[in-house]
Image 1 (cartoon, rainbow, N blue to C red):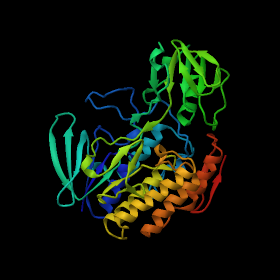
Image 2 (cartoon, rainbow, N blue to C red):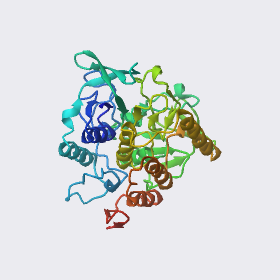
Image 3 (cartoon, helix red, strand yellow):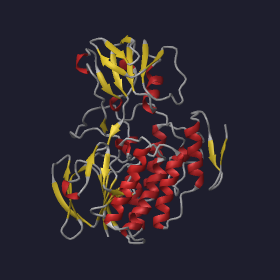
Image 4 (cartoon, rainbow, N blue to C red):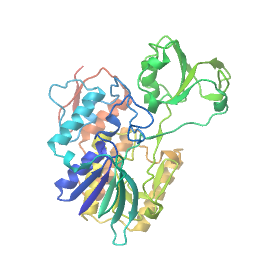
Length: 413
């Protein structure tokens, strides 16, 4: 079987690794000049020198908010001398390089190759049109299956708030944050209180005059700096500040939106039978398989989860389906199952734009167990979900963890 993989981030790398191990031909298309996806750091924002929109939202000196024990492939360990659990961006990228080297993946990657269009072929395969971003050379290739691994952190989500166009100061999204220096001696409004909002509060507060954090969810793990003020959501902007839902008014110099990203895959043609809208791709079976064309698979859509272990298991499921190691339900039953899944979420008050959100260890455990039950693949190690539950209950960035065995972990410090 000839397999195409779109993207050379953590999901694309494991897709390539398993594809070759299973005896398939594999090409990985990566529009930049490096593998690693979101873990690549660059000072640049906007577009790169080749005119490609910069994918990464990585900022300088980032430390992970997830322990490395939940960011590892099951067949590749971090170096023994890497004892900390919460590590730097450079260390994560070094680990991905180790993985690529160990499994000889780099030879499979076609760098500076943008996927322009994916459409079904009359012979039940896929026609993939690519473009060399340097030479503009265009190609048309045919594959038996395609695994789309292009990541979630590409297209920023910007909320629509009354008066945004009235505000006189700069407005930016966290995707373009690199260092705190531009905020020196300013009063900064940060909109959004999830992980990135909290982390950037801690980065910006030491250099800023004052930081105002506007959010609606409980703060998870940061200790507030003395110059940080919490506020409710913004009701409307003014020329120099904002009125908040509690009717208080604050003035500030600039706005930084930490409001997440929404999923896009502009290269997937309408002929593929998918609706990509409202951050939800449908219809997919188990958030992976295109119901209309079951040889198109998506890896890495579920979020607020343990990314790398989840990617690894999804790829195993994907290849088992492609190799017909288990029987897929009928198209009608797959669509009915998706309907039941969404109805159950709606009954809990979960909006459709969070269709791919797992959010906690219980949901992740249930999802991965479903993949195991359907495919017959041995379940993911229980310790992964147990440690994830511990992290979700209490994030302490100074902790060090050790995986003891498939069931247990221990806290070292």
